[in-house]
Length: 166
Image (cartoon, rainbow, N blue to C red; front, side, top):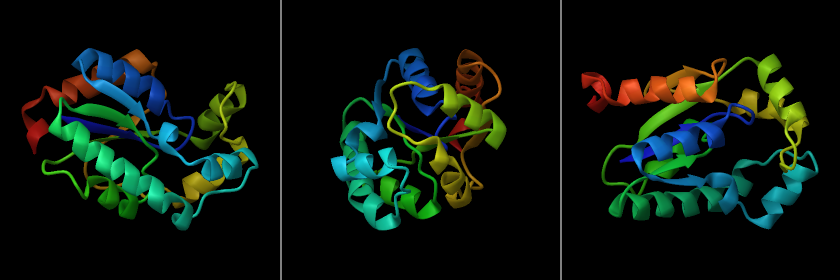
């Protein structure tokens, strides 16, 4: 099983993804760990990435997802803001990915980002991510107001429901 936990910065993708992976006994990966140094430098400087910056990163992640699918599955935390990005991410997978979209208010996300320590993402970039965000009409859109454990419980309930395979 492959699950991609998506959303803009501050939604808790990594926290929720790690908890979900543990609950499902799957490996967890953070897409941020696969960014080239040039992308990280731009984001640290408060410069938004463009599609050209993201292309090689997304292609790397697509190959990783395929490899993880061929082994024991995985949970990936990845912004996956646009439909075109999600198409690239799924391009090498032979089975459907389960998409979980974490979503919250700009005020809540700004508050979370302002209190985050040691992360390269500049809080000034949140508005550009929200502008780029294309919520799909598939997968599950989950509100991030509850605590991470509650969010994971919601996702697990959805995974265990009869409609989870549709």
